[in-house]
Image: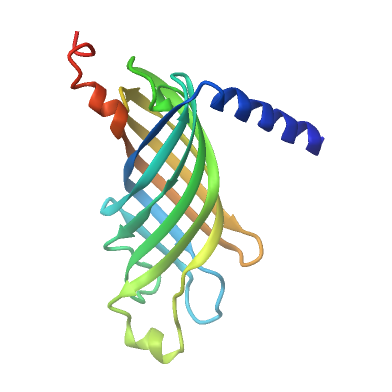
Length: 206
């Protein structure tokens, strides 16, 4: 079974790269909601969440064609007012997701015709809560917050046109060893710079 899956992936990779286009650009995200659950520490409540004011940005590359592409991205995100309502320990959260995706239809970011599409992906995310304004009580108990790792899966749906895509994204992470988990839900905008430049081409303006 394992060899069959590896063989199918290898065949897909060869078919994609044999006549592929390449794109490079960046991605911008806005989590409408995120929630991070730290590994248990027996000191304080380990959860923290944030609404709306959560921004992220990072580089992204694509390889594929108009209806299908493979992409890789890395983001740095920050939630300015993330906190634990149950027991305040400090403000802010941050995460660094590293994601590989399979993109279909309009989300290939390599097509010129506007259309809808979807994508699936996975990777790693490093997250941290309570970045600043740490409460004295939490410090006195010996509480600390470090970056923790989760293994993430992601689905997205949206619209793409000439190197630009706008999507709704749900990303869920979990680490069985530490029981840490993460949820990110929001909007993401991708910009494939070479394709965007084609819009300024007189031939493409017709």
